[in-house]
Figure (cartoon, one colour):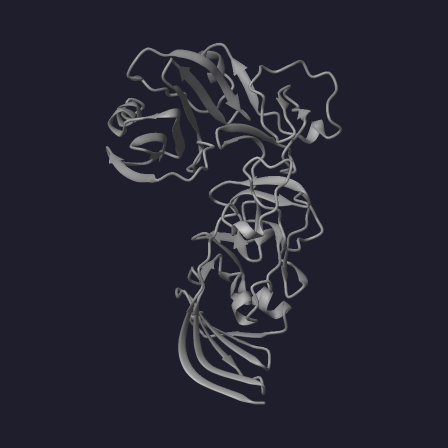
Length: 390
């Protein structure tokens, strides 16, 4: 029976949900569960995140090779090349002279995609369902990068009216970093995939080496899998839930089979001067700590991040610095306080609970910095510590 719908609609999809947020009725607990995250219930691609010359996205049950260019992450969305993916799905793709409007047509569905606009026009000529002039919003506008038009991959979920049109898979971005698509949404935080735990940072990038979350340290192998119930390549013991036991490193006698491929990130040093010799950037530490503190440890992570831990009876203060402009705190907890203050032209993000700041993150001159406190500190006090690093 034919149905005719002539309408102008705006369909807004709430997207960007992190991997930590799910309904309680849907969860299933797992023995090796560092953050009580649920098992992955959606199908995933058959290959693991290895540094091989394979880069595919799964759409409509097809594994579409997108090559070395990879995907883009833009406004928290996974962006894919429009022309290549659409043509692989049987659409005829035509752009106007200015590359401002791109038209997709597969004989039953007609789509208008607008560069610089968050949304697309949808028309169905299917004899069973006719829909005219429907406008959908995806959460990020269509963009052009290196003369290639990119769209949010969840465009295809909307086109085919199925939130599982886009599969769940690992794929590399244009910088060669691995990210994970959960039916087209960018996974953030812990994710259980093929019964193995992986951790993606706030930008969706799969992590390797040591990460700190929920107040504990975890070690991620070179392929991203969390180490559990073993000794890490650098000699630290982690329990069956992946947590470091907090004890000093032991001497490593037997290395795992893939030890040569595993990043051994943490190196301990007795002095800042010794750590400086292992780094390519100049170390800067806080000049003011508001009290007497002893140095608990000094180390580098993968020789591209410096950290020092100060301790007294009230607090442990971990100061980190490294090259790049991203959150290097390793703390991805959700806090009630999320403020940004401008100090001498530098934006500093402050996070915490109960009027106490537990994390401060900032970047300047292509260097990232963070301060983490186990018991928190008043905002004015931590601001003074941050200022003392300038």
